[in-house]
Length: 373
Ligand code: KG4
Ligand code: ZN
Image (cartoon, rainbow, N blue to C red; front, side, top):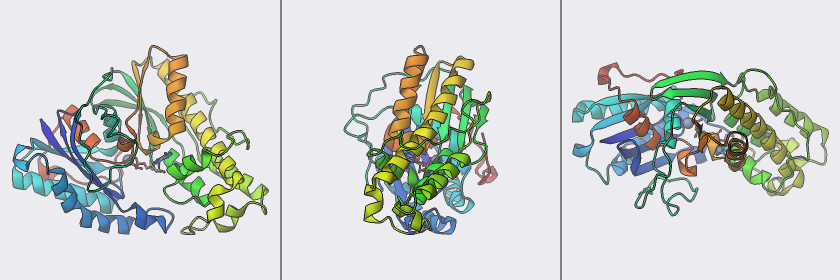
């Protein structure tokens, strides 16, 4: 079965064709991220306008390999996300469903992220970790699927807007067992990067700066790490970073320019203090995520642990969680998507629709910005 997935929940416009829920035929992603960089964060109105510009060429390109007559169904992200952006993909997909007389499946964006783990891993030559840009196709020629995900699974979803621990009992049977009480993990990375003048999006910028830093240089808190629940909190960590930056002023350059849109100075990124702060912040966030996920996996006696969402692209988190599961819970299999499928894309939306095949009449589908799991 060929499903055409469409994803427009934020600043990415994505379309993909996936065969039988696992095999990527095409994966096209266009992004307005560069425009938002100068504002230090996403401007919803601009994101929505760019969605309108990108949607037709992106969908056309996704259909380059398989003509639309051979597509069996459409899948579209209905939420959560930015209303203006969501509406573009939802209305576009509904129109195609009506025109082509094909079934359409509404998909929760967060559930979509989970299904990046069910897609066949592309060969090393195609999963080099670089983002798939508009105009490039991710073709899986010699795909191998080493392991399949066994359920029940525990999923850590870490994105720009969400941080959730979800028990996946079966396809379509999800239970939320914990989550952030304030900022999402990705949001914390973005805010920390802004504070350190490292630019937007913050996750990759913090990771890069942290490579040259000492994660033990600053003693930042690990909020809620020993609480008996499976919740997270990142706003206190962000405040602690801010206070640490203030303490080491005036020698520390980035404090002078935390306003949105100030381009990173050349000195900022190379400053040892910046690198040490980035590394210490990153390690504190990772420690919280790894500790609670491992504890929950043990309690719920799952077969697999899955990492999902944009922050799943973080090298330290991937290594840290993988190592903790291997050492403490060796009977549990650990899965994480290839780098290019961690951040927003439409392959996982098509995969989620395949495994949760519940078409709805197109006229009943609507954008739901506040949708949860
Ligand atoms: O899933 P996603 O593409 O969009 C949402 O659904 O929110 O996630 C975007 C988030 C951003 O906050 C970005 O800073 C973060 O993922 N991110 C990372 C990395 N790459 C992207 N965070 C930490 N390390 C990374 N390498
Ligand atoms: Zn996302």
